[in-house]
Amino acid sequence: MGARKHNTAEARKAAKKQVAIARHNDIPTSPRKMRLVADMIRGMKVELALHALLYSPKAAAKPVYKLLRSAIANWEAKNEGKRIEDANLYVKEIFVDEGRTLKRIQPAPQGRAHRIRKRSNHVTIIVDSRLAEMNAAEANVEEKN
Image 1: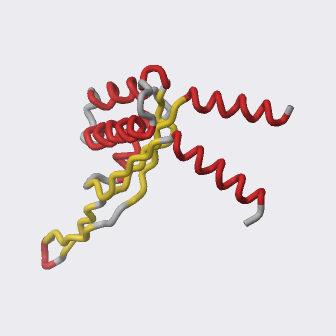
Image 2: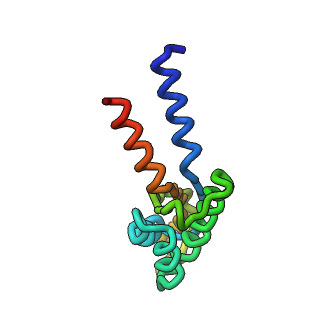
């Protein structure tokens, strides 16, 4: 392996240690409805996002709330001894992918049948610390100088 490739791989590995990822597959909600909730909290501080999800009237907010709590727990496991409030955690990325679609048949008049599509989705949340980003940006500036 070349030196440049090795250095970039090490940098990528170090960056992955800072962020916490949580995934939930096959949530029985349509991706379109889930994306409305995901757009609501994208880029928010973690505390504000939890409150927004807790008091949101959308049914899709409940699984996202649980998933965000899981991402926070993953961050705490990776960064033992650090407090969330001091780390300035925020929702770095959240995206919703389409899951499998269950196809069902609904009887219709005159011997016809309508297809019912029961959609599901996969949600991924990435939580990161703004302090880690600032430190990385300062390190890059120092390397260039």
